[in-house]
Length: 251
Image (cartoon, rainbow, N blue to C red):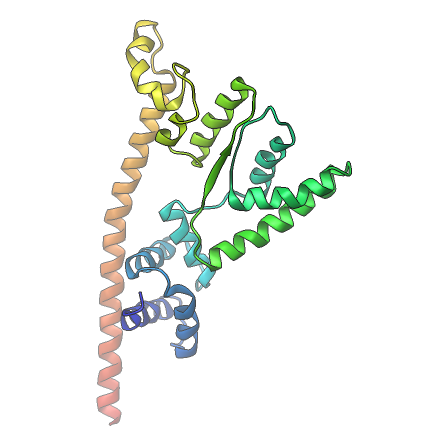
């Protein structure tokens, strides 16, 4: 977004006006230094989305969080990450985790080996939080690796759970699941079997409903985003015109 500082300033002006604050160029420069690494479209979408949910003037971290969520670059909460990382203590388990989870586990494992699980959890959460902040600051995309355990049943459970939580796509999951196991990536091929067996919807039906609901929400958001963007643009143009008129009157 390096060539769009004027557009960014216009967006910030709209935010100042919307939240009843005076325009502050120093604050704009601070926000620009943090957010300029993202594209203008990403920032605009995040600003518009924040207007729907934000009750106070946004901080840069609020905007970054919305950008990451929209791009799928969202880290798990520390408690969820710990539950996954803890399974790495048993070599039978397959672990699907991010680089941050893996590195934090290395720190926690030293404490765990001393028999202090509570301390290990604390060490993991502190390290994980620090690593996430570093990754967000450096705009590092989430990188996921799969550490295969020797228990094939647990492997299927771990891979399927990773699909549910968004760590793995269905296409990626296929690489780690033996055929013809009942995986999410293969459920579409079982639709006819479910119907013939008298299963009304089964997992396939749940999956289809989730997809339909997601598409419906995305369509509604596009319409709302367009409306908000137009409203923000008109408001900015009106305020800019008033400032110009005031400058001419005082000039």
